[in-house]
Image 1 (cartoon, rainbow, N blue to C red):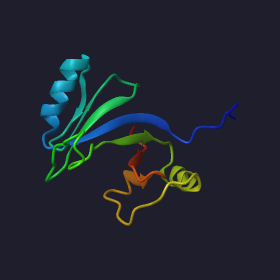
Image 2: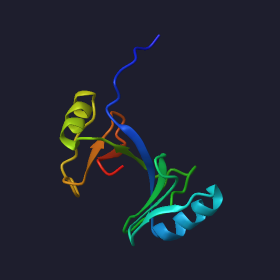
Image 3: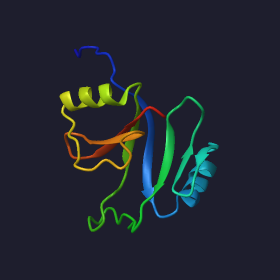
Length: 126
């Protein structure tokens, strides 16, 4: 039996890196019947208001995964919504996350590394 704990975060989105976020978002929007909730040149969200979303982020030099051939591994990360970036980051570090040396936009969102080495983001905007 597992203990029930107070959650640290809300599940916000799964973000897929790609060369063209608008193109990939249009595909998944049509496949899943989900509207575009946010769009910029480098980032697009599709989903339903108040529900976890699917997002697409431009990655310069993106190389398409060659799975199951391991030459270019699969690429994805989780976006988690939090109420307080500093408090959530501290708690996640206590739980075993690691902090990378660089933070692209630490005032808006933070990148952390899970115990298996996968990056994930926390943000108050999710």
